[in-house]
Amino acid sequence: MKHLTTPLTAEDLEVLRVGDRVLLSGAIYTARDAAHARLIDLLTEGRNLPFNIEGQVIYYAGPTPEKPGKVIGSAGPTTSYRMDPYTPLLIEKGLKAMIGKGLRSQEVKEAMRQYKAVYLGAVGGAAALISERIQAAELIAYEDLGAEAIRRLVVKDFPLIVVNDIYGGDLYEEGVRQYRKKAKSGREE
Amino acid sequence: MRTIKAEIITQEVARLCQEANFFLGKDVIDEFKAALEREESETGREILEQLIQNANIAGEEQVPMCQDTGFTVVFLELGQDLTVQGNLYSAIQEGVRLGYAEGYLRKSIVEHPFKRKNTGDNTPAIIHTEVVSGDRLKIIVAPKGGGSENMSQIKMLKPADGRQGVKDFVLQVVDEAGPNPCPPIVVGVGIGGTFEKAAYLAKKALLRDLNSAHHEREIAELEQELLFEINQLGIGPAGLGGTTTALGVNIEIFPCHIASLPVAVNLNCHAARHKEVIL
Ligand code: SF4
Image 1 (cartoon, protein in one colour):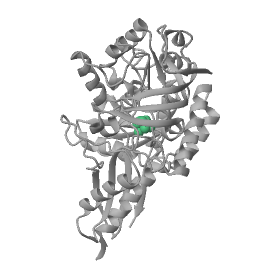
Image 2 (image 1 turned 30 degrees about the vertical axis):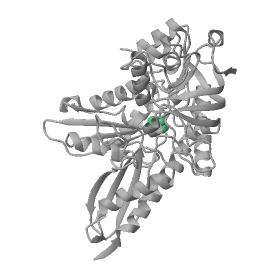
Image 3 (image 1 turned 90 degrees about the vertical axis):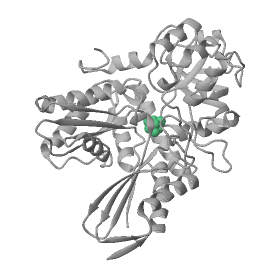
């Protein structure tokens, strides 16, 4: 089990390998498709992002509204591939880790290797459990997007698994290969 | 002629929306536990344990088990001898509005496919109605997550493709979906009918209990065979590798045109939610 605290440095990522269990603490930022589209618009117009992305972590999540007295509602990961078109540019600008679930594109994997960033898997659908690790939540941009707004979360020991490391490893491919007992498949071609 | 007030329907729908999101079905939890015994991957077992824990927390604290509280799909079986005082469909939409507000559920519906502005109350729900004999109303509320819905597919096979063609297509859909629909998944398959009928049957198949089997023996065998072969794909819990990729395969069939063999595969995540009431 490895402990990480944000913001992340290049050295933090060097020790991570595919399949490692990580407990992440510190501030992270939520963003989904709609927020990503706006971030990219800002960058292409040469303007500042609503938060400094250097060394930061983006969590692909759109939580449920919080019940009275709670910090946040249920907040599990959403499927990451929808953010793929926007991701390489954010990585180039200093994004160090993404938290989500599901497959990434070749372009994203290439950008992770080139600019040294990692993709961390959270367990999809374990949203009530994950929420217990979130200590604070603050809306920082795009309130009009509702669940899709950008929130700054402070997490303590958020349980994650390294899916893509900076060396080009991919847990989805390696894990599935290990347990596959059937030759026929769309993915093996 | 029996009558029922629209307000009662609204209240029941509001309750079902919340209960479906808070309380995972016993059949699903039982399958998690059974899978925990069989799963070969250690990571896979850890994830199954987390899912059991997650379901417990959601139930105890009455919070949504998943943040995607879904597109609200409502199935009605309306007895033809029942009269609704008020508008049935408006009563259901109102119930969704109320349930998603009261339960602090996420509002995930946008009003236009391109303009994509959130409707703010999770309406409209999708309502499927079947008229049956009798004077009762059965309401099933099945919130459906986007992650697994997006991985679903339909194909118009040739009659010559037959049983093997259907099997190949189902396996291909599950394999292509990989980790995206939050495995372990439930696989709903609709075979026969027309294009839209097959899709409807696939969704309806997801409502059946995981421990149930199709009443026709040949189809029940196909369900078992598919489940076995899907679990050999290696995708595993959360798609990180393992022997538990699906918890169940449910198939529904319908007569076909002489020229067609439609197959629809509707994937559901482990947050396989549905709650029902008979009024
Ligand atoms: S696919 Fe299901 S379990 Fe996964 S995030 Fe979506 S609704 Fe939740």
